[in-house]
Image (cartoon, rainbow, N blue to C red; front, side, top):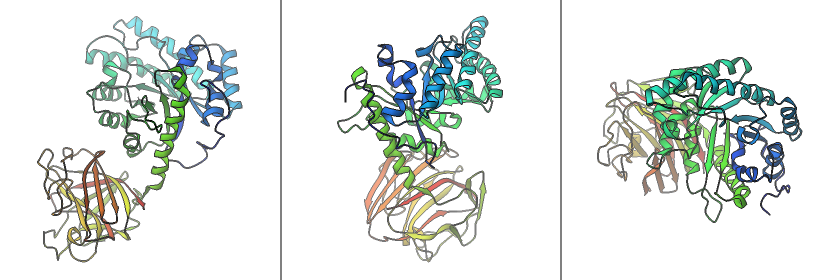
Length: 467
């Protein structure tokens, strides 16, 4: 297909708002910025392009492409009419032209706020739920935080009765420091103010996965940036499967905006198609891995021996475990699935207290010690210690992990266990730590260990796909 063609390639096969999906997909206008700047397409064309060429029914506008139109009701009515006519939802507007909300001079900040207010009204008129702003300005970290928080609190108060939220994107300089940006969130502390995590806007030395994980706590939207693709059209600059697992584990089910770019006008459309395809692959995979812990009760699970299990805000908490030893003939307290599993992909998050001990059992029996009838993926508060057969991430007393990636006590960790025949693969915090073949047990229960009276283990987002 020729670059810039509006040929109908994909019909409306992506029913974003009519099906129960792990996340929804929108299209960021910046993905077409070179076509827009060259005058080959117009902002008014954007909803039609999103729907007819890409089969996407939600869009994210950029104010640069209609910068003088925030108060132009005739123009806004036409844009809304075109979006409505295509069945396209206007999700948000990204603002880049309104000035520094963190400017050193109070008058400069006031002017930036004043220029932003009409865009909030425009967003309301178009049916948007969100306006994205930037944390630009002068001063050191503390000064800029105070100035940006002051401006954003004012914007959030203006947006709230209009049913809109305000979000800051990690968009360079201090805003790309997740610790600093999180401190702005805490300073403003309003329910309609949050972040818009972008997968790509971090310095090269940053761990982007950890940074996005920190920002997802406050996420109002997500930007799936992709800039490099291989010959098969897969994204190579970000592991989308890993990144979108972080998004899902944060409990986010809203729109993920495609923001693709190759640096080449002729490749913009294909980059969007490629990014959409990868997000579809991710969503298909996520749709197969379903919750086996409801977050509300212990339906589908059974307690073995004593130990206390409670649920708090969707988190399963184990305390006061008893009777554990290394004796293969004796069990202690644990929580078991009622169903046995053979081949599966298991996902969950966990944390333990300081000095805490726990574990995840796979293919285990209700008789004897489940760590020996099946296998135990060891959970233990020992960050930074050398890998061992009894350390964090090991198959207990069987195989040591390649590396110890457990985080300090109190921090959440992600765990994935893939069991297929004798092959067992363990990933922690997005990285493979163990891969082995073991024939000791090929079917059994999945369990969560409640180890002793000094340990407190917490689990959430427990999901499983049978293979």
